Image (cartoon, rainbow, N blue to C red; front, side, top):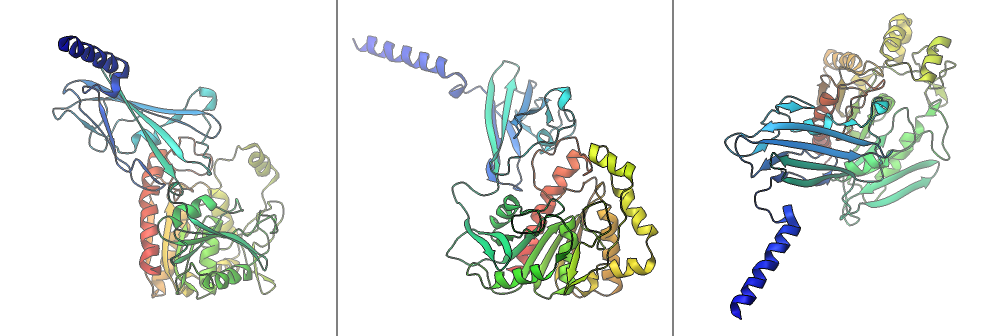
Length: 443
């Protein structure tokens, strides 16, 4: 009787093992992922272990974007004597990239179908990014895992405060309603509106972040034209009154036209301890309505001097059809052909800033030559013996969006420029460096 029971138990165990398959099979590959679930900008590394030396192992990544388009990457490795594959140490023998690279399976991802060849990965900024990782050996044994990136930890939601008073609009995020954190104002670029998702990612690192829209937002101007700088001055005063803000100077963060803006604000007001400008300009540029010359910024009722020229009809048609892939020459020519006195008046006097400065620019920025612009500003700081700290990260091969910590960069760059590989590695490095810079001078 006892033998029958033991036999029955063994049979059941065999059946369960067979049904469960790779759930209990000790021979299957094992996927080890660092920081498997984390806020955007957190580094990631992948190791596949429990492999047979000399075998081949195929590793794939799959993710579906906000349009429903499936993105994939795949590489094959020859397993060495240690019986494992470490992506940052081992080079694949075939596949979508060919060098040892911890991030290769992300930047090399492409959309399925040739008709989708000009797509960027469409992010849903309200949701997490999920990337599936699959490892299969020559025996057909498969292991799977998922990587998740989010702007705020779903298990530790950020505190939130809406700003809608005295003409100001915005959203303030901070980790804990019972504590105070260094204050940071985040400004968007030419897209306008707010950037809540980016504010959440910065706030998650230990800041009170106000994403402050200034146009293309309910109750605010519809275009980046004649924006009064008093608006930002008032926002700083509002920030300093909030219970979630530590006493002391405020940080400013902005990119593109927002990078131009934060540097101009820093040159006019002494309320800032640290300023982060990515893909910035060295001058003030015209308002963005493209059909007439109008100022972007005003102060005390007067327009600030600016550079720029109206698009020709041909350029405008190309722009509307999405055929312009670079605006770099437009800005270079506008700067070269402008009256020297106007160039002087429109220059951002960065040497007057009483704050620590962090610059980031990509050498392949095709929206405007931000690396050229940044070198102009660095030269001015040196010539004037600037009395504060300044750092410049020049992202080789990076484009206009190099600061964003997106994990899937895609290979179609539009007029942002940048190569997928350099864009991803540079963005992650610069993101962590910028946050460290803010902590250093605001904490």
